[in-house]
Image 1 (tube, rainbow, N blue to C red):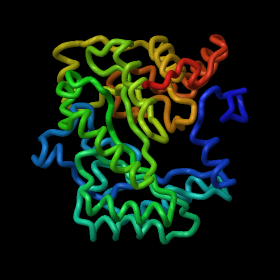
Image 2 (image 1 turned 90 degrees about the horizontal axis):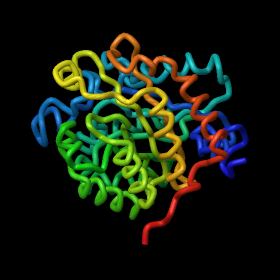
Image 3 (image 1 turned 120 degrees about the horizontal axis):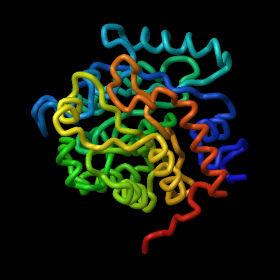
Image 4 (image 1 turned 135 degrees about the horizontal axis):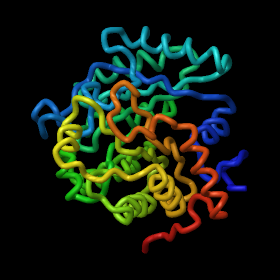
Length: 312
């Protein structure tokens, strides 16, 4: 059995991590705090990343027309039917959630932290959008609650970065990881498999790179082509090759093998809204993908970190 598992999983799941840290079921409550993004408003770019929907990668965040308390309770009350004794983490998901004046950030975050049984916050943002003033505040916050900053890297390859209009460099990401870790703030990094024209080797190189950084978690996504996005326009014109379901499972299992064993796998596939999804349609069957990843790891007699080698 894998050392960070008490089930058939051969990788370090978020559910296992939360259960052992908080001695309780913990679920994240996705929120939309009404932030924008410097890659949309012209500060660093316009149009956003080519795969982002109008909700700013916050398809499952709350209704922006509702206040944060209402958003929180709507999700919480639904989840409590399944887990009546659970604890919660407020997940600021949509757009760039440190991209605002500090007084606004404090008001948003602390509104959620005051709620009963909230044990932490996850804040999704960009590495180019955390000011030194914000870093000081996040350090204070991390001493009061379980704080995680989620950074969208997606790929280490600059050619792909330009194609997807990410509008920040790998160096920018690396520097922010170091700044956050100097303050002992937890980091989860997002990556995307299947980005246009990337090879399997390129995707694995991204994981190898991250395994040698001081990060605490990773989210592995499959590229979703969604309606009304720049990516959809490009796909309709160029018809670039999408990786198949079997290829995705193979790549993820390889990535897990190269992933340092103590990095918590927060997500291992995409979860797009069916009504917005153009391709790949196999993403709809999320549970079967998860099951087949498990089966492949058993077939290989493998587990997370088996091929990890620390870079000198």
